[in-house]
Image 1 (cartoon, one colour):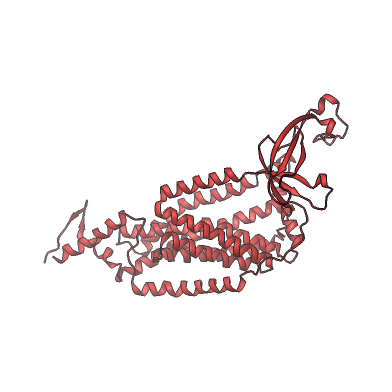
Image 2 (image 1 turned 90 degrees about the horizontal axis):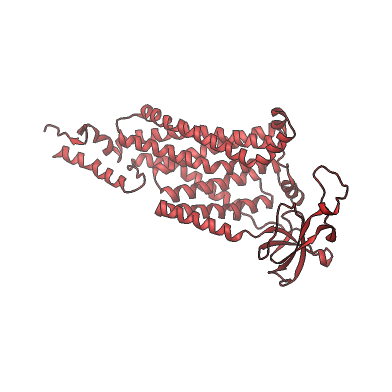
Length: 440
């Protein structure tokens, strides 16, 4: 009778496994204490960091009227008239740099758009916007727009169209995304969306204001990324030993990324001030360490992919152990690392292509200039992306063996604990699901 009882226990566990996503066998009390001894101080340090670095609000500054630092309101195109460009003094300057005025039949027709301000203290006020035929942004009647307001300019020039209002299509796309996630992921999809909202809350309420306030960007990024990691992983995957192993693997990889990033950003003399936006930030807040901001971006950008890799590797080792409880640490590591190598190949390629896609216009400019590969790679704009990509990729690659060995050690060391039932049941199973009784 004893042999039958042992055989029924794993079957009950397997049945539970089939109806939920990856429930892990319970671990021994000793292993729970070891994991808690690592994670509780870490979580406490993150909480203390959040309290110590929590911003009191960014200092106010006088708007420059440049780029994003402008007052804006909502507007709407209420009328479009076609007029001769020469009648509105809208002379086009060719890309060749030739400033010779074109002949009348080359000037073309311009759009004279009447735009109404639909929000703010000037609601109902209208102004005229001239759109040339070769302008990349063409306006149409009834279109919602974003208008910039310059209070110090002459009254006729105070308002201008700065962008198109894209709120509705963006909100619709976000709604479709949420519906797809919930429809496929069900409760886990809901928790993933909640975790995503929490991540954005940490980013907008803590990380960005703390950096603007003058706190060290690297320290803020480490504390903020750690908080996001703890909340997102435990919220999505449960408060289990499996999740804890993934958290530890992610933490080790983040530390490696931080060290490598700090070393090579300093060694390559990357300032982090490479375009108009970073230049504006440096002008408004000169106390911000722009190279530290660059490193903070590397850490935060790597976190999302790291979570995916570490959770996948941990789950793979757990499932391998449950499928074959006789595998030891070495066997689990070898099987898990074979899965990890496939993951490494796809993730690194994905990361490199993602950065290349984001920098495609810049790379196209270098191609037009017929610059050599060495010249392109040496420019700070491209060097930043190279360092960002390679440092993040090294952290991702390192996370696979680190997380795999941690997971293998945990599940293997658990054989004498509460999770031993899965291991004890292996000798009493035979062939294709048939039971084999032991002699009394």
